[in-house]
Amino acid sequence: PEATLPPPAQHEARDVSVSRLAVSIVIFVCVLALAIGVLWFVFGTPAGKFNAAQPGYPYPQPEPHELAQRSQLQSYLADQQAELAALRWVDAAHTKAKVPIEDAMALLAAKGLRLGDNPAEAHDCPPVSTASPRTAAATNCGGGQ
Image (cartoon, rainbow, N blue to C red; front, side):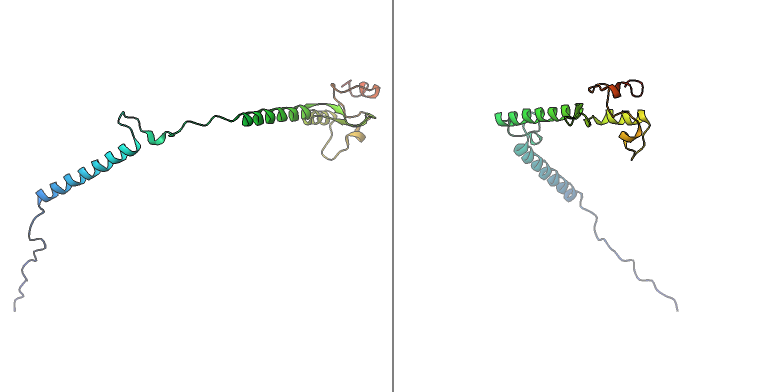
């Protein structure tokens, strides 16, 4: 017995309507253009500048008390920097000096001290810099520095 094949199935009885496809594309483009126009009208300007990224108000100018606070802060920071850079005696007996960190590191490096060494016990020289008040012992110490 011979097998008979069923007739081929027809999945699409008709083709895509070109006119309906064209109308759908035209409607989509019109809706897109309308949406862009509405957004441009709400957020933009017709002159070609897009104002949505621009602030709608001028930047506020600082108040006089804010300017005074800024100048006070700058003055305070300048005073702090001057205090950190100052070289002075801490006590009246001139046994302890306040030395800027850079000068102190250079002094310790010149004396050949390591971390944890006591600078007062390393030599007979007190830890002073050239800009500090000089004593007789400091003048004769380590080449006159």
